[in-house]
Length: 325
Image 1 (cartoon, rainbow, N blue to C red):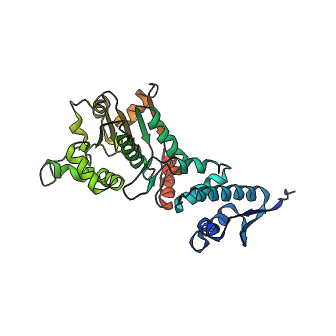
Image 2 (cartoon, rainbow, N blue to C red; image 1 turned 45 degrees about the horizontal axis):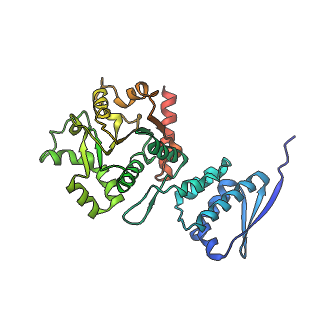
Image 3 (cartoon, one colour; image 1 turned 180 degrees about the vertical axis):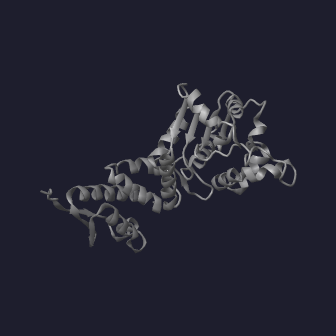
């Protein structure tokens, strides 16, 4: 005998039509998505939103819509990713966490855009950076590991918690071989560092970027340039750390001076080291996991903030790898 589902109806009152338009989006695309994902029916009558469907699903839709209305009333603009993630939270009965994400503004870009954690995993990552001197952010492509770390660095710099930002990554394609590229040394390493330049340029803008680079307050350099240095009062980011060797990782971690923070980001599923070379990031997970002040944060496909297909691609590859193993 199948259990009979209890049908329910709930009405939510909005302030005006403008609020409803903001909530449901252009051509009601947000409303259509909510209906599809939560398996409910939504009807609009004057300023009222009426939700029909099975009781548990209607309650989740109600919490979701009330949460979105509350966010809109604070003046925040939600992206399509935000709406999709809010729906994912609602499915798990966690709509209340959406406001926490929206409130956690890390910094504001030169174009006036708020940079904030977009998933619960990213929020844990941001909190870990605030509360620890060394943080490892490990996860697949598209989870915002590097961009969010840069936003945290810019915030610390603007608040005068540090005097400079240092961004570095190993120059690895098939081993760390720079000689085949034309030009002087800087031109040889620039292609490897381009993603760091682009993200930094986006956050602080072209004029500030040039000024800070010229004054040495922001430095973007290959990992080899870190050897022999002591980095005081700095926010240091090591990107693509899965491509460091054991020796490089140890060298980098021991560069930290007083009043400094370090964030190490990497994706252990995309190691480009030559055969026979062990990833310094993999080894650091074992060696450093019990040291107080060092935090490891693991992001997953649920934290991907690129095109929705990227999340599915990451998940498909993970499942394939597990099956092969």
